[in-house]
Image 1: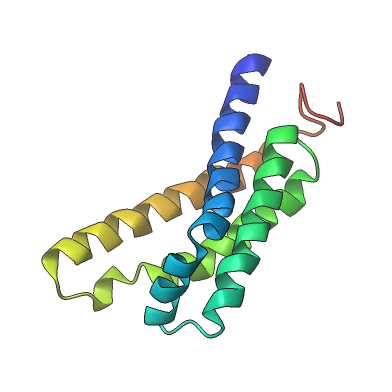
Image 2: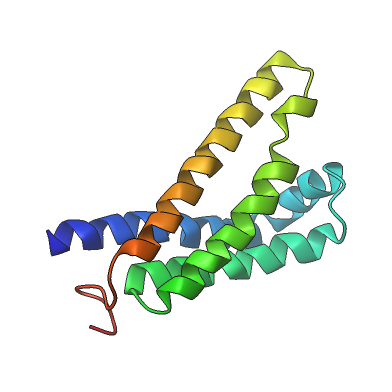
Length: 129
């Protein structure tokens, strides 16, 4: 079971690491999208959250500073879900569908992140075990 939990951590944490790296690889494009959603300091928002996501993902994968890693994910997801995926303000049916799916996905990710808080520490096969 501990190897399945490790696999889950690698998949979940890797999702955040990959997303954070993409904030740097596709920063210019993301800045434009973020600015279109009227987020102040779009460049800082994109690159700052990129760092936040990489740090959070590493914490989950390695099983270190887990409460901090979860907090970083929550700090990212709550405003992003509300501000960036505001399907209730979208009129185009295709865009509304995409934003609705992204909103729901983020809620599921938020639930998964919070669930990690209830796994006793230190985690098996973690850097600190």
